[in-house]
Length: 148
Image (cartoon, rainbow, N blue to C red; front, top):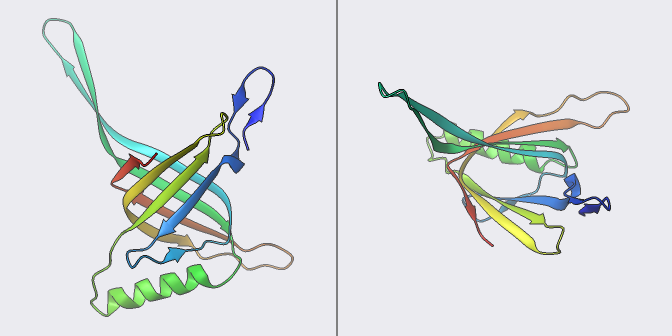
């Protein structure tokens, strides 16, 4: 929930959720997401004219995404095994979408859809005594579009 400090209202990490929708319409349930990070990628252009005026432009080039997850069940492992098996069987691998939902301080909801997401399992977890198993997924998306 947003937090009102009496000097401004701020978003907290609990204000966002991310729903991964696979190409077959199934939802990939990640367990306990402990961190979600979305960073825009861009290409910066520069022109240094002989008139002495420097000109700049920015071209959007997609997004990088990451999820830190405490493993709750076998869902992520099974998804990765199925994707890996499909690849080696010569099947076409399709990208997914991710719906990001943010509860704003004014009570409204903002939603953005990451499209064309190539999702990767970076770390299936380090199994050790008396510790949660931490998993990491990353992805790259072609677009982030406003839904509402």
